[in-house]
Length: 233
Image (tube, rainbow, N blue to C red):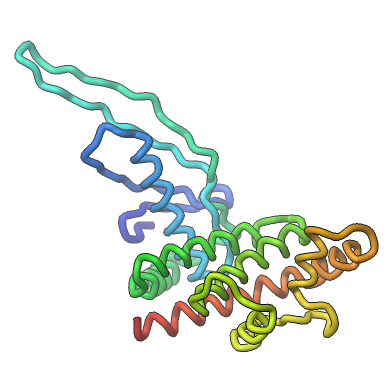
């Protein structure tokens, strides 16, 4: 399956793909960083398209030989292959036509944001993916909370925000602020990080129970924001 300048296929429950990056520099570290950034954007777009977390996990970077012509012939410099401990982890194998349509739809929406907002969105979605792929619901909750904090700051354009403002934004974007109608998500997060014994046990109980719900509400809010902003940005 070819999407954009990526060639991808499903193998053993994972997406395996390749693309190429050319730079006017003999700097394999730079090429590696650019490759990771490019693949992170692919994982982000597919995450938006399918609402399922994807992450970059295993990258092979091939530094092509450098051929220099000299008076006596040619000098060929060969480099070792680099590997990076990252991967695109896949939950399902959708139809090619659906993936292509959704990929270009969300890529177009993201391209309408300026660089600063786009970079923030990529970080927001990276944290969401971390939460979605974490097997421990308490850690999942903490990742989702970081995602939500970053997203709220993006929406408000502020560097920090009061609890009341945070609650109001959550209400506006459809994120449940008090999942058990008593304790709010900021309380849960703070007690998970800083409390001991009874309060921490209660926070862990609530995080276990509501982490998946929180993640679902957040990704729906992000997708709605990207889709609606992409109409006018």
